[in-house]
Length: 285
Ligand code: ATP
Image 1 (cartoon, rainbow, N blue to C red):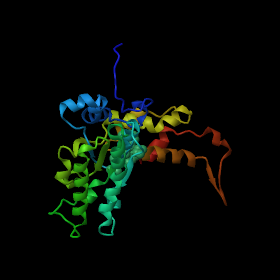
Image 2: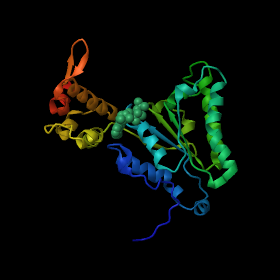
Image 3: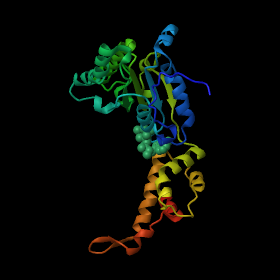
């Protein structure tokens, strides 16, 4: 086999199969190729291209489709420090002026390390959940306080400032692409955009497998459960809703073994608890 050199940004023991993300294989692959490929090459080579690494990614799409899961797994996959995860509404601190300070603080560790170690600095990941909350479309659809404006400006300033910093990756997430300030989406900022949509039937099957894998391993799953059938019956379910379905089915299974008297207790046959097809159908109902 050909020997390869890799300026490995990937954790050596990381396995894509272990990500616990179903139905998004091509999205994960595409993000990798578009956002991280350059980081695998020697910095001296990349320098010759006169380009900078991708600094920001935007994941958008309906709620519960695995955006947060994916952002966290990207953090785990890359040889990075524990990602900083912040929530848009959280940043919008009610004390005016404090939100800009919150943004400044987010970048401080990465900036400090880069000053000390340069290209040897570790990768820092900053994840913005509900990014739309701080982007009330500057100017036009403003909430009147002007707080959103200055937070976006601060974020833009920070992102442009990291131009020299090769050690930062920002992952933004939103259900509302239309609410994201266009200035944030330009090259050099959140430049790779990836839609994370509702899973198709095959994706739903993968997600069902992920969320029932423990049950299957432990012999808890009833023999009559057909995950393919469930995948076909869960059209328009998000990953989060499929997760909810499995939880609900489990709860029906538990409840078959519950006796409620003065105190709630479990029946003696509790060792035989299984999650059956009926439990999934009750849950679907
Ligand atoms: P929101 O936009 O509401 O924040 P999200 O897209 O970030 O939603 P997650 O928080 O990643 O959604 O998903 C919630 C939970 O649903 C996950 O922790 C996981 O259990 C399950 N889930 C969602 N999508 C998937 C998926 N593709 N594969 C496996 N599990 C999933």
